[in-house]
Length: 151
Image (cartoon, rainbow, N blue to C red):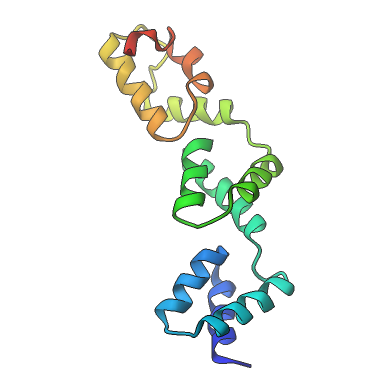
């Protein structure tokens, strides 16, 4: 067994990695492009590495941590190097209730979110939720009035 395959199997034994992450790790270890391509192709043929499965696991993990669909999609695309089509397929497969997740996050972070708020307090809640990747329609009804206050 090659050194490259041994290295990748050791990584994949601990957790899932995207193809992009594996390529970067192997490049850091100075493996040749040919070794990298062959090793990743072998792992994918054995279904040891699969970007779809990686994305589904990542979506569930980040959603449990209080992040919305927009933020997760951005992380998968930019940080993990996953193709948009794979991300969309994984999102459909996961069947998350983003409205329920938004409500859970509101309850945790802002326990009195339903009470009357000043525009400044509402803006703080909106900025927090948007920065965590939720769409305004997923939480706007819970906070009170629409987004008109913030433009």
